[in-house]
Length: 402
Length: 79
Image (cartoon, rainbow over all chains, first blue to last red; front, side, top):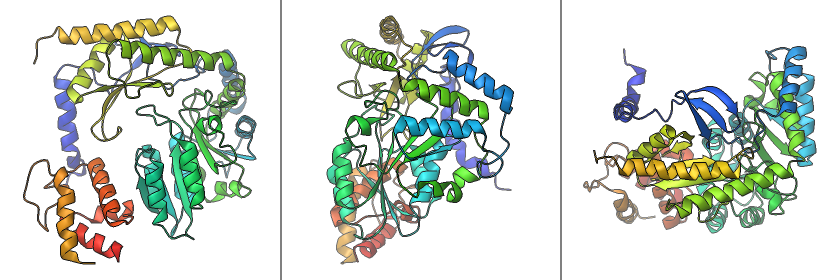
């Protein structure tokens, strides 16, 4: 018998080698208590969370919790079914209405996760004979959506509209085309030049889809995302988003003004062949989305702490992934895996949790310690985070070289 | 399009990714011999697309295991 798992031996060896150096497992962190959107107990120690994507700090909002409890009591623990069969309850309709109100669109479709939203949208919109043109640094869920579908897939160099123009120009003029962009790219936290990219897509008569997972709530007048901030509301065909970041629960969605958008419910497998969200989750999402419509103080604070962390780490001599703070993702570049893991471990020992990111999640050859800020962080928290980054670095340089 | 010239230029494009400095040949495998990871392959593909002004759909990449197969694909795509 061929052991099907033996193909993963190199990963097993690499992971074991990593743990044998005595560090915490960067992929095995357990939070034994969650105290607030920005504090949890990890390894018995109260830790500041700077890597949760909990941008608007909604996870413990009293109104959100109350809405979830009420729905749990009245609709039960789960729907046990697909949206197109027995799995559509009043809270699912209500959360889709909240999305339509938030985005000002005619339609909204809720998926069970953000991953499935991309999987479903990408694989269903572009079919056989159509073309998908995606940014090279697109999220894995977008690439996986391409694999699930039957379209021809072409990628262009990250955020490079000239490169997009060139590649679109090589495609048959009358073929169906979907250009897939993201407002904020999650690894480096950089913002896409959407006006230029969308203009190129329009020039070549392609439809556009923008994933605004990392921008909801704090970009644009209504918090709709980078596309709103850049004045492209009439130019984007489909917007994809998630409940697992700014909204503070789990789920995914797509919104659109396309008159035929609703048909996707009947033809999209990642929508119709999976159970719908638990009604309590839908209810918490609805409550949260409605509160995000009036969250000016939260978003102002999120930007303030993001800018302060970028400035603080830069002043402390860390190499930043972006020259300026472009989003609520503030990433520090490190030279290689060993130094990244060592620093990540020291940070955790100093009571800071951030994300360790490495290829293939990151663009080629890039190793990151990625921080994501929350509206629930205070400016004083940022002082503590920066001082612990410095202390962690100092404790590394105090160690004898291995 | 001339297969021989395409192959020769292809070798030049692959050379910067040949970190181990092995001798490149028709049967050289991208995964086993050059040990290119999927991200590096993507960069090489982008360079090839620009060199010959073609789109090389991601869907066909899994079938292109060797330098020779890649040369055949470029000739075919260029038409």
